[in-house]
Length: 113
Image (cartoon, rainbow, N blue to C red; front, top):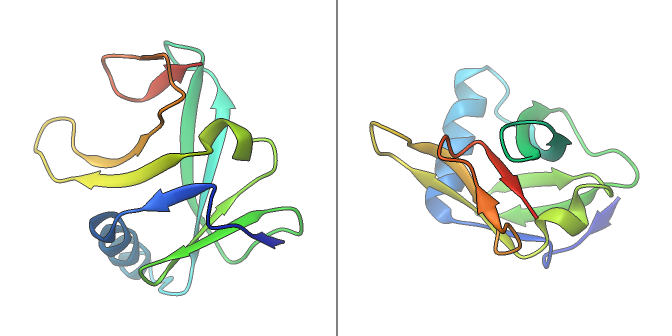
């Protein structure tokens, strides 16, 4: 497990939403795992899930009371990204803003590099 604050940033609004979702699931101490997987309209998609703790090779980012875990394969892809929360009725939710993405699908769920 490597603590690395340079991998991604987490906005305070996103952290509040992550904490609220974890509490709603009855897991107030859960960590948020961010993973990039192949698939979606544009080639890659983000997978967000709650886990109990980091795996040995994970990058760990702690911001605003939230621990975000990134596996070593996903870390270079999301490097420099920001996890944000948009409360819009259409297209809202937790979003990764990745400056390395060259194209994002209209659905907002997939991207390409």
